[in-house]
Length: 108
Ligand SMILES: Cc1cc2nc3c(=O)[nH]c(=O)nc-3n(C[C@H](O)[C@H](O)[C@H](O)COP(=O)(O)O)c2cc1C
Image 1 (tube, rainbow, N blue to C red):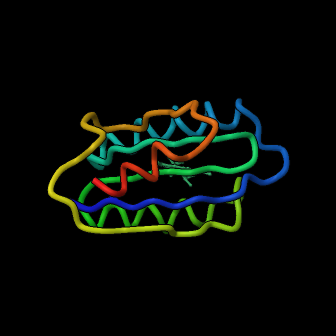
Image 2: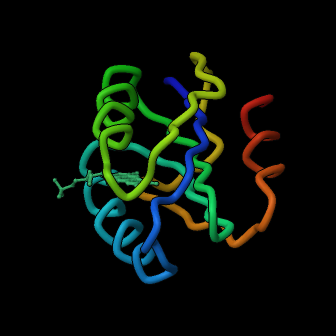
């Protein structure tokens, strides 16, 4: 099991509606790949934790990195872990305006 955390900057034109579309579509994809995680958006920046098999997580991260709805993607931390923090596959949405909660997750 592997966990990864990145932050990025939303490109102009990204709204809460874009976020809805991303989470809706990601939920399906992530369930298929047995990936769990959380995506937070504060109006300017994204922060996301992804967990699953290392290969799947890194592959998805590569795809996400190239998404033109955001830029300046910074990989904050990645590591092998014993178990998931987000226990249902898919993608949760965090409405938290700061990213503390996700940062704490990486320490587990
Ligand atoms: C901030 C952000 C987070 C994303 N998170 C995910 C994700 O967790 N899972 C996913 O499949 N796609 C995610 N995407 C979308 C991917 O970059 C890509 O568009 C998508 O995987 C393509 O899916 P499709 O082949 O079903 O169209 C994210 C995009 C952005 C901008």
